[in-house]
Structures are given as C-alpha cells and as structure tokens.
Amino acid sequence: MSHAPRTGADNDRWYLPFAPKGGAWAVEVTDEIDGWQHTSLRVAVLAPGASVGHRLEGQEALVVPLVGGVSVTADGAEHVLAGRPSVFAGPTDVLYAPAGTALELTNTGAAETRVAVCGARVDDPSGGGREVAVLGADGVPVEQRGAGACRREVRGLGMLDTLPSAEQILVCEVVTPAAGWSSYPPHKHDTDRPGQESELEEIYHFETQSVGDADAGRAPLTRGTDREDGRQPVGYQQVYGAEGRPIDVLVEVATGDTVLVPHGWHGPAMAAPDADLYYLNVMAGPGPERAWLICDDPAHGAIRETWALRDSRCATSSGTEEAR
Figure 1 (cartoon, rainbow, N blue to C red):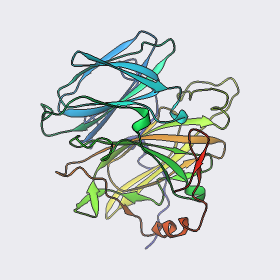
Figure 2: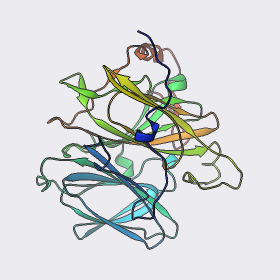
Figure 3: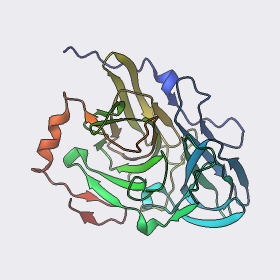
Figure 4: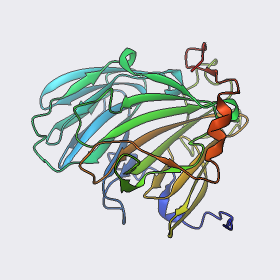
C-alpha cells in the first residue's frame, strides 16, 4: 500500500489555534462546528474574582482545572477544586456534572486561573438521576505507558474506572517528556465493532513547557504570549485517513491549541527536544456502550512488541520513576 505524504491539507478545518475572541470562553468547541457532534470543550481564563457560568443542556461534563484552582457552584452547591500550579505538576481534582446542571466557575485565588469544561452529548437531558461528583487528585490513576522514545504518563481523570456512572464522556490527560512520541503507534476509534473498536470523536487540547520551566516554577504561557527569554516550546500532531475516509492534519501545537479528530488514524503527538508536551483528551460517541476500544495502524503497530525489551521507566510528575 502506497504512503501519501501528509501535507496538513485539513489543518484549517480541524486545527484551532489559541486565539480568544473576547467572549466568556477562550476556547469553545461545540456542535456548531461542521461535522462535529458528540464532544465539546470550553476553556475559561479567569482573573482573580472572575466567574463564568454554563448550563449543561443535553451534555454531561467534567470540570478540569489546568492552571490554578476554581470554585464550582453546581445547582447551588459549592465545590472547591484546589487545582494545580501547572498541568505538568501532576493530576488535579475534577468535578463531574450530569446533564441539566447549572455551573458557575469562580476564581477565588490571587492569580489567573485556566479551567476546562469537557462535555459529551447524552440521550437523557435530565441527567438520568446521576449526581455531581468530585474526584480528588489522589484518586486519579497515573499510568506509565510505552518505552524508549514512546514513554508517556497517562492520567485517567474521567475514564471507566474513575467515573463509572457517566453516560458517554471519557477524559484523560497525557504528559510526554521532551523528544518523546505519544499517541503511538497511530491508532483509531471511528468504527463500531463490538469488542474490538469504539466509535468515538476525540479532542486534543495541548499545553507545552520548555525544559527547565517546572524547576523554575513557570506555568505554561498560551500561544501568542511572548516569553522574556524568547523560547517557544512547541509540539506536533498528526491525523490521517483510514478506509476511504480522508483527513490530513499535520500541525505545530502550543499551549491553548486544539486539534479535533472526527475519524482516522491519529498519532504521533510529538514533543520537541527542548519542550515537554501535554494534552487533554475528551472522547464520546453515538454507541450505547461507553467504551474505549482502539485499533493500531498495522503499518506501525509492531512497535508494541519491542516495549517489553526496552526501559519502560518514565519520569513522573513528582520526579520519581516507575516501571510498568
């Protein structure tokens, strides 16, 4: 089978660079985007004391602090999420809210906060009796995957084991150390094949940091914000078509950028040699079963067989190493 080189021909459609337009949300991915149906993402940048409200109409959601903490009022009840100084510092506490919930997010701290509201379309607009739930940071499973250049840290913020009562939403976040590749081998989940593959849309929301930023206590700066040292931490993302459904995304990403994956093989997500890469994944689909089942691109899937023979240790957010 011939390989057509990627050109980024569909970047304009599926790549959303961070470019706030002055509304309540600095990032807003909804079904108003042509060809997008099942997932949503809203990111607010809140100054100290600032608030933003949102009612979940036909969607359930997971509130994920990215930088700083936030107070979440859900149908009148207040929940405080302590958050974190940076997505690279470790997992965060999160809040699940069922469909029909009225949310208000408030920055009660002394510094700017950035917070994501990850959403998934559901069939029952009433929420089906589900309740608001908070998962503490210490309850988030942290898994080391891959080996060698493919080593990465995966945090299951809202997957099947940590959020069993949700209807459709799946949320995780991945940290890839500088010069590493994640979302590899390239894989897909765009066809309903029970027991083998799920049909899921996927959102990738990125952050980057220069090597050394964590030790210096520097939080990631969104795209378009100049650093005094002139550095520009970036990564790269690829999406390409499968089974006669073309898509061609090959793009540089930085903090605040978003890539949408409606279908097709996706990966690698590549960290530059001088920058660590983070992404928040939001997934959901039309199937009656909430499941994350993937299949690898057969041109690259054999790399998994080599991982058992290589060093599978990956530096965790705490600076220690684990083997898996």
